[in-house]
Structures are given as C-alpha cells and as structure tokens.
Length: 107
Picture 1 (cartoon, rainbow, N blue to C red):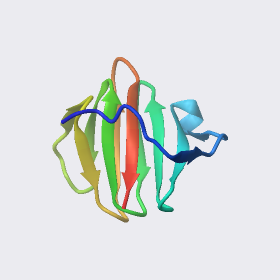
Picture 2 (cartoon, rainbow, N blue to C red):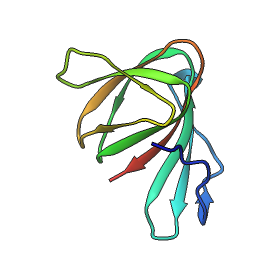
Picture 3 (tube, helix red, strand yellow):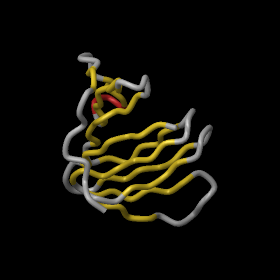
C-alpha cells in the first residue's frame, strides 16, 4: 500500500490536539466535502485510545503495535499499513523506538 504523502484542498485547525502529556500530538483537517481527518505523531509510549466513530489509522512513518479491545494478541503495523478500529471501542497502542506518524481517517 502506498503512503498518503499529501492531502489537497484541506483547512487545518492550527491549534494542536495534545494528549497524554504531549505523547500524542495531532492536527484536525477539514476536507472540502465536510469530513475530517487528523494527522499526528505518537512518541514512544504505551497508550489507550477510545473511539466514537470508526477509525482507520494509516501509518506514515515509524511503526507501532496495537491491540484492539477484547483481543489478547498484539499486531505490528509499519509505514504504509493501515489498521481499523470499530466505533465506540478502544485500542492499546505501543510505540517503542522512533515516533509513529499517522493519518486518522474517520467514518
């Protein structure tokens, strides 16, 4: 799978979303069709995220391990790979060495 290098025709919310004492920082993007995405980075850490809407996390750089709610197995994802999280759920994410850069696609 190819990595999304640019997103054209977007408005960027300039104030960052800062989570987990700065271990995850993202910016919200508003697309011309009214949908939203976020682009961000997770520093080395182990975190738990909750979802409202379904999400697809596209890796842009680095790698991570994730474990979906209710599962015991960790799965590894690298740049160019995408994992999906259902709505109203959660997932554990572990970033070990270098920061994990991502695009979060909602819906």
